[in-house]
Image (tube, rainbow, N blue to C red; front, side, top):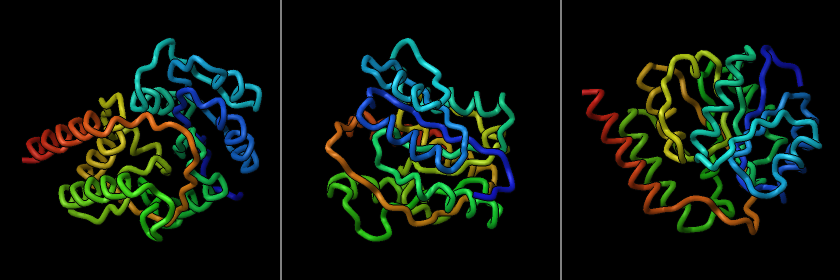
Length: 226
């Protein structure tokens, strides 16, 4: 894959031993560096990823997806990558689509490229689809541009965006926080269709708790903008 920059893939991982090895192996085919942030897993997530030649950064205790992403972003900035691709560790995202995200970011000069899983009514569980559509509508209204899948963790993010934002989120709200801050600083955000691969792996999302965090984040952003 010919690129105009130097990028790495950041994967926040928690107890993903069933999927982390195959995911890293597939990403390696694209000749990209891979950073797996093991967020206090008690299984073999870290060792399996390391066996596949990923760089593994481990948290001693589980701190949440947001903190794992922030750790990965800090490493990417220290290592002077031009940007990152983020992916979930559960095998939900197709590594074959990584080049599309990067190419869209480069060709369209976007700060963030979001994967959009909502375009074709794929295999997303109905309750998850409804909640995601609602949250995406709220984010779209707040940032005043259409964000069809605001909760998708499959993203391309430029280095300059990461340098320009000040992320505080420690859990799933970080994905919304990044969009709000980037939009507030007038970065170009685009979306491209991606497919979802849902498997029988437990979700770490806690709907009520994470919705409360999401709404609190939205309220703080609206107050800050005013």
